[in-house]
Image (cartoon, rainbow, N blue to C red; front, side, top):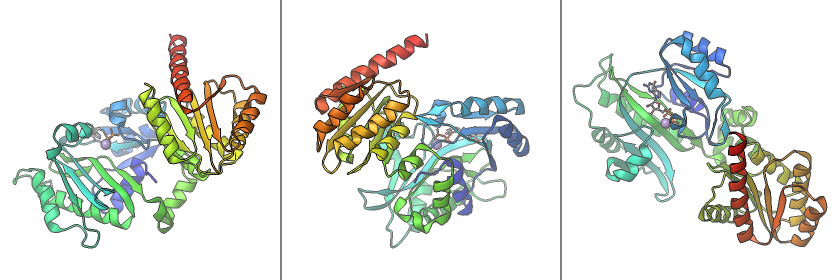
Length: 397
Ligand code: GDP
Ligand code: MN
């Protein structure tokens, strides 16, 4: 389960990691009141579970109180990588001297925790990793030994901080950084996280070390040990991924505009690859799993269509345990009721495929095309998505 930035930061605070005072706001007026309470300048930050908010315009620095409400209103109206912004974090702003990157993630290649540090952090971290991979410190952490002192010293050395630097209370920056690395490791271990990332971890102009961002993922299989987090994930703001999880679906939002629905992770991934190869881009990964009934199909369509920015929907089912006629009934149920204004391409093969196609043929749903096989389905979906996107542009002038 991915945590929103504000939730990750409250875990950070509990683990003794330095974060700035902040308030969560759901309305522009709340954001303005929060800013007044915190004191200007503040940063208004979109709360969505994806990176790249800064580049998408979802992070705004406000120097005057009068700027806060309109910045919050702009951000609350945004959708970032298919996720609608429902709340913003209003946080005290700091003057940044250095942006560092620090993360601990569960690495399949290492078969265990991997500590990653870069002396150059910030919104272009992917670019740093590509351009200068040697600038990154990558150290596997032995889960039995835990993080060792020498590994912390390696990080501090790589940060290349001046010996003379110290915060307002006289704590050397090197010591603050070492404390952050240790606290992040303990948080990762104690919260059963698969990712604890701070980007940027900043050194401020006054020599303090502060976590400006948080990205925390908790292992779903360990949620039973974290009743508070689990309760929030069930009861909290109903986002798409939570709704999908409740319906028993595996769902991941991606950046493109072709909605994808399939059965089986391998099939869905191969469809996404084929879409990319044909010049299109997938909006999501959605796996119905085996033996899905019509209700599950309906729930999946709900989730995908609620993304709002889709130019076409591609349904690709290879029925093994799953019966294609069950899937077809689910499609008819949703597409028949809701006014779905994107073209839909359906591919049904395998178990009860003929019956499934018959169900679709009988329903005569406008905008639904049944393709003969996966290759044709992908080709059609990419073509209709391009045409639909073109129509939208013309409509919008
Ligand atoms: P992301 O783009 O989703 O990773 O969002 P971040 O929380 O990492 O913010 C993006 C960028 O906004 C950071 O790298 C900073 O450069 C900038 N930023 C965030 N908070 C502050 C702040 O308090 N002061 C200043 N000056 N910049 C900030
Ligand atoms: Mn960030």
